[in-house]
Amino acid sequence: MDGKEQPRLVQYRERLCYNEKKIRMGIAEVEDMADNCRKSRGGSVSDGLYGLGFIGALVYYLQQATSLWTGIIGIFKALVWPAFMVYELLTYLKM
Image 1: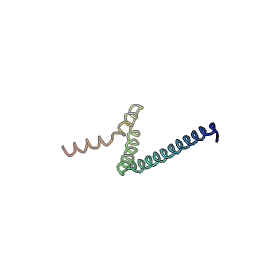
Image 2: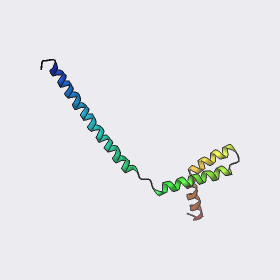
Image 3: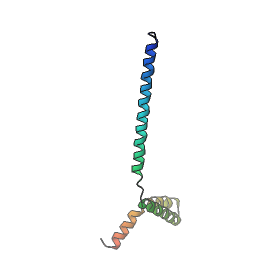
């Protein structure tokens, strides 16, 4: 080997090591993302119940709407229907 081939070999090895580090970091990042996905899958029954309640409230309020603005207000009411329900329950129980 002459003097010109030696720096090329060193550059090749450095590039190979750099790519190997990138691959290892990539694998570690993918494993971290997989762990986060496993941990964050905490959907509960209450999420589905709220979704069904939202759809039901939306249908109800839109059927009762007589104008565009009452329909838009109905959409906002459908988003916060649990607050109305709790308020009515507490007034019924006189708390």
